[in-house]
Length: 324
Ligand code: SF4
Image 1 (cartoon, helix red, strand yellow):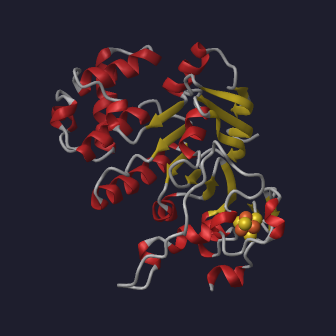
Image 2 (cartoon, protein in one colour; image 1 turned 135 degrees about the vertical axis):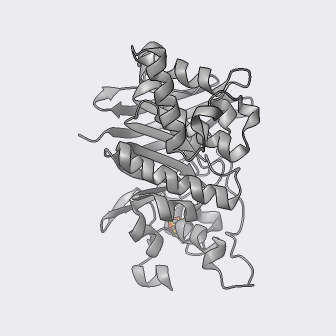
Image 3 (cartoon, helix red, strand yellow; image 1 turned 30 degrees about the vertical axis):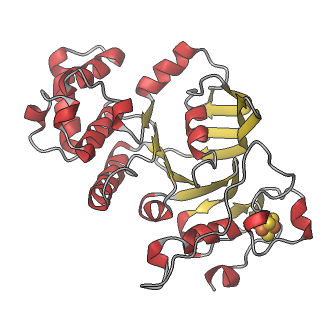
């Protein structure tokens, strides 16, 4: 049994203009200690998938179907109390904005100590020692002294490290990280990714790392799932998918990574816009932007096995075409 099994997940939002189907039949599995990159442009449904797994979809949003099993336990429809207990201890979330985790009016010490005490019967002193250790592990110098400070006394990068330290306090089995390094400059981003990778190895947590940036995934994840218009369009081992993408959209995303473009040349952007999820035409959602589109693409492709990966395309790129 996988640590996490998501099957046919459907999440939708009621809007004035109709029902917006943000996640449409997402299925994925994650093993202990594995890092999965969930990649897509904004509006692809990747963050909503993360929030849905955690049961954090508020009205007018709702999980309209499917199943999320964590260590065998069904989370869809589980009582809020049970979800809260899991979220505090066995599953952790790291947000793009660390202030979604941190309370600006409490010292870091108070926040970290209370987090430990909320889930474990240990002394305040032991909780404090744990907090100092966690801050040290995410690369914060003089953690004992910095513990007494307030969030505004930390830089953006340091604040995100504190949020990650809080997420790791209970050595969670699953961490869902939603673009946690996107707002940081590239050097800080690199340091945090490196430390995160090290910590995940030490703790053995499974991670879903949500990002729009394939370059981030290359160095961090074991597997990658690429989302487009609410659906997974390609999923497989990072090395396979990034070396030879089989879906035209994945190929387009890779071509638009600056490092993959010849120096000084223009970036190869995918033409067109992401379609509105309110008015999705039947068939492949990528076909308006796809240079391989053909008549058959008016019918929705299934997510099918191509070798050892899954691809949602009637005409998956062959390895030769994908690297050409
Ligand atoms: Fe392109 Fe057709 Fe594949 Fe969609 S199904 S990605 S339109 S080739």
